[in-house]
Amino acid sequence: MAAPRDPNAAPHVPVLLRPLLQAVAPVHGTWIDGTFGAGGYSRGLLEAGADKVIGIDRDPLAHQMAAEWIGQYEGRLELVEDNFANMDAHAEGVDGVVLDLGVSSMQLDRAERGFSFQKDGPLDMRMEQSGETAADLVKRLDETTLADVLYTFGEERASRRIAKAIVRERAVEPIETTARLSSIVEACLPRPKPGQSHPATRSFQALRIAVNDEYGALWRGLMAAERALKPGGLLAVVTFHSVEDRMVKRFLQARAGRLNTVSRYEPQVEAEQPRFELVTRKAVGPDDEELAQNPRSRSARLRVGRRTAAEAGDIESGVLSMPQLRGKS
Ligand SMILES: C[S@@+](CC[C@H](N)C(=O)[O-])C[C@H]1O[C@@H](n2cnc3c(N)ncnc32)[C@H](O)[C@@H]1O
Image (cartoon, helix red, strand yellow):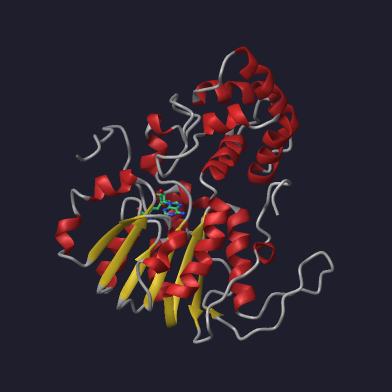
């Protein structure tokens, strides 16, 4: 059954689609869209000339919503419910892979998904709609680990203060809603100045990343894309915050043999056959027109690489500067 549509929800507006299609033109053959969402990228690729798109999304909602319109592409669009970290299990020798990281407007707009501090709902945040929720994490983690999650995944400088308040408040009553967590975080931080983000932004981002293992999925997904692409195939990734952009940048640079490893603080990378060439030397952001139409695109960055014929392999997460919780290696 199709999910009921929230009449107040704006449809998801694809970000950086035009520069992405320009960077990968001419589009042909089979593509993987690893973050199908509302299907904006898949449709764009099909309309630009792809013969077939395999749309992957870990969220069952994306699949329910697509059921209403997928028929119009007459078999050229195939949907798979999975994590993009497993993309090479669904297709190999593909002409291109696109990833548009983060959450969709459909996920943010639905209070019952618990992604947004602006809408009260259960403290859930699971893209897959199964496994441990954000409420479970907030209940289970000890104070030090909670602070580590907030600092490592949200770059929240008041992480210790917030973790202490969470532990104090959960002893009074379980923290099970987005509004309650948001008000606990808000009480720990100064009132934001005009133009500053809501005080709960970083804590919500941190919990969402932890619940969905987003950095781990990106690391494994980049390796899976390397295995799935044929020589000459293109990898295009759109990120929304600096940590993810840095991971993608370092992956492509390392795979293109261009990672500067002279710093004594950074892991040494052995010279290998380049597995990618850089198509974009610098990250591409939105132009003025897109910024005016969709302010949400402000922090989006696109990077594109072209696969060489060198054999695929693994890469250490440290090479990508992937943030890790202290207890984990
Ligand atoms: C920003 S939206 C993509 C929007 C899409 N490009 C469009 O134009 O409609 C991100 C989507 O990727 C999905 N997603 C995020 N991480 C994923 C992962 N590791 N594996 C599969 N899907 C993922 C989310 O569930 C969400 O639907």
